[in-house]
Every structure is written in C-alpha cells, then in structure tokens.
Image 1 (cartoon, rainbow, N blue to C red):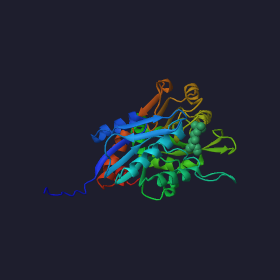
Image 2: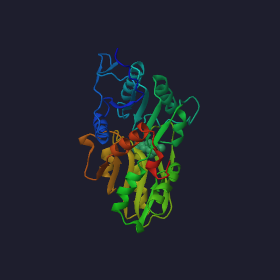
Image 3: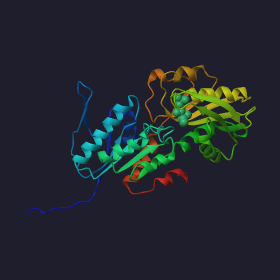
Image 4: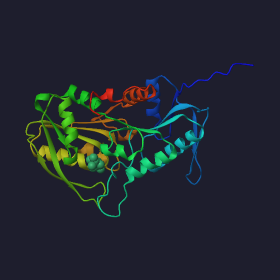
Length: 326
Ligand code: R5P
C-alpha cells in the first residue's frame, strides 16, 4: 500500500476579477506566479457567473479586484469569487481591493442614511473573506468595520519619493484640500523633511454629491510650490477649486498628488483646463487611454501590492513596509 503523505503547506494563488486584470497581472509578475485561470461571464440579465479552472483546495487565495466603474458590478463579482473559493475549500481568502468602493459613506451625515462602507465589509465577511487588503482608505477607521485582519497599505512612500525628487523642498508647501486630511499632510511633511503645510477650509452640502464649496486657504502659500494631496480625484471639483484658491493666494506653482484616479464625468476636462502643472496618481484604478493627458503621471502600485501579499503569505510584517507609518 502506498504511503499517505500529509502536507500542511499552503499554496499562494492570485485571482482576478474582470475589473482591472492588468493590475493583477502586474502583481502576479511581481510575485513570479501566474494568475489562476478563471472563467467569468454575464448572463443576459446581468447576473455574474464565475468558475475557477483549477483546484483551489487548500490555497492561500488573494482575490484582486479594484472597485472601478461600474462599481457595483465589480464588487458583486468579487463577492461571488470569494463565495466560490470558500465552497471550493480555499484555506484562507484575502480580498484585495486597491480601491475600496463606498469608502466615502463611512458615517451618517444626517438621519436615515446608510453606512455603506460598513455594509461592504459585512458583505465580504459573509461571502467568506478572512482578511482585507486595501490601499489608502478614505478614513482609517474603516479598518474596524471588517471583523478580521485588514492590511491597510499606504501609497505615501511612493508618492512622496516621486514628488520629493522633482521639487525644490525649500519652497515646498503641502496642502490638504480640507481640514479632514491635515493629518495626512503632516505625514507628507514628515516624509519630506518637515516642509510647511497649509489647508483649505472647505464646506460641503451633504445633500449634493460631488459638489464642494472651497473656502479660504489657511497658511501662507505666497511664492510657494504647493502640492495638494488627496485620497482620490473623482470629478476633480475639490482639487481644481483648491488649485484656483492657491493661485489666488499667490502660489507660484501647484502640483496635485492623489492615490486613486477615479476620474468620473468632467474630471479630465477640469484638470486639463486648470493651471496645475502636474497631476500625480497611482494605478489603483484603471485609467483609460482617453483619460490620459500630458500632465498626468501614473505611478504603479503593483510592487507595493506584491510585497504586501508576499509578507502576508509568509507570515511576515506588512507594517515593516511603511517605516512606522501604520
Ligand atoms: C472627500 O472627502 C474626498 O477625500 C475627495 O476630496 C473627494 O471625494 C474628491 O471628489 P471630487 O473629485 O469629485 O471633488
């Protein structure tokens, strides 16, 4: 009778939905492994079907899907993939959402509103996710919405290395586009050797999505090269109003740096029409060719995701990737 060999070794597997397979390919290349073949298609009424073409039993599964438009479809597909992995006996399932959808709905601004960022976390948990991996959540406390480990990765080192290599730090001011992001501006300042910060006092009408009212600049930006930082550029209303306000206050140059290039509706036209000298983003979301323009710089998030996935798989330290900025 042949000897029965027992192995508790888990196998790293990368899966991708159809939202942004190119990013998953780049992450897989960083890890030096192929993406596990998956069939996925839509039924006539829009329902999604998914099946893995190989056994996934016992695997340490990382399901990559950025919540790009159409957001609800990408989320549903990722949920269905997690469900399929759970039912096929994957050992551990990590949802990798470089851009986590609904993150801006993280609290009730008024009565009778949802907390959709929490609902998202519950949906992934119910589907079978053991952990989440995300990049630059809208607010850090969303980590607590998921009942399990959350690897919250930061694009900060990637963005500050790039910006720091291009600007004269003696004339640099980091600008938060609202008071809520001042803490992040302080981290930027730390990373760039203690440069000054400023912020824009912004008020928003919560009844009108994507509409912000830019107020006054708090801080001295006269003659400065300003870097406006944000987690995302959606319609670019926030950022272009900030750029205008900074020039009005005497800034000599304005650069924009944001992690997630949502770039909905009028965003590209607004950015092209603005006096911003460079818009620096990462590729947590797909950026179609028609949305690219001369002053847009896209930095790859794939090496960071690859390193984080390796650390999780090898039971290493994700915190070590950020020099204490956890
Ligand atoms: C707001 O709190 C966010 O951090 C972004 O500033 C905002 O969602 C960007 O949206 P938009 O580009 O449409 O102004």
